[in-house]
Picture 1 (cartoon, helix red, strand yellow):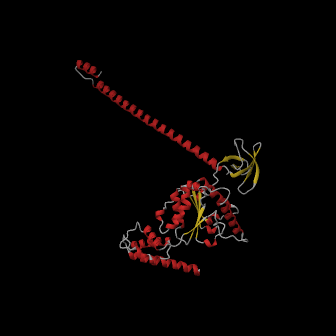
Picture 2: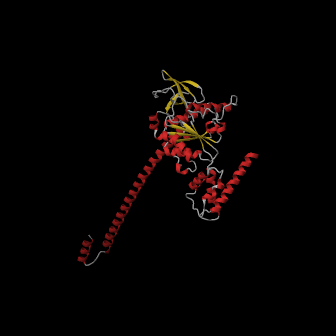
Picture 3: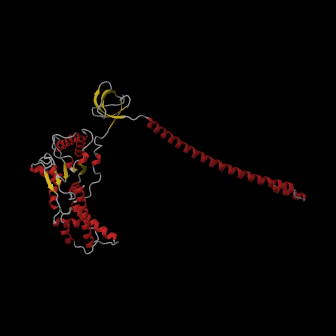
Length: 410
């Protein structure tokens, strides 16, 4: 069109400046309009993207709000009581027993099917009607005594107890690993052993090592933990521990400081002493009762065999009594070799330390090796010398003398 205008103007010999300016202005406006349209389309795409994102976020917030609202509603609901079904009656009725021992006649919700005696149920606090049936493990209180991780101690970590190790292997390890030998001979293997001797001689270490060698479930309990506050709780705990051991067989029950539970009984005593006696009698019944222990072995340990009741150490219960005493000269050397195996020693003659360590227990000899290492660390050395051991022996002996004096004079 511009060319046509120019042509017409050229024919007349003149160029119409107004026409040319008008055409150029229309072209510029078209360009601006196209750019504006493209910009608006781009803004529209951004707004659509933002709108989609906001809708997605709104959906997520709505779901989070609904979840929080449901959780809040659940938290506002009153707690339910845990009870045990004593008797199931017709027409959705039942008799329940609460933890405090009280019994109540109540209604059973329609949706609960196949309700049986001794089932655990949840009941409403006000009406005591059964609203739900639950499955609760009966041994939750005793699971804490089970070592989830298998003991890492092995026979090589024990020094100076060669004869004791052989006896433990014979009574505990052999029946668990090769029960067919006893079946072929026609005898019943011993049910358990009692390890007795001074503190720190390796009784607990022997129990852990045999659990490691047999891949058995290791249930460790201290005698004082079996003595409970309320009547009957200690006996129930003992019963649950042995039930747990049977369910996880092969298992080893290790009762440390059994003298806290199995001391000689007296005819007259306080109510607390009578409760200890009830728990002790339950222990005797579990070891030598109607239910055979099978692949469950009992290892007990004590520092005071002189105060134990004869009922626990008679044949048929803890059959073998194994004394774990202070190490002799060869035992001292063996213990030193075990605890110095990874130490950086320089010019150390362990044989010269034996005479100085007479009367030391295995735990005290281990303490001497640890203290000798501290002597080197204090002097910023990376090796342990003979003098470190001599100073450590003197320090441990003085500490023991101070403890003995405190016990003597209070």
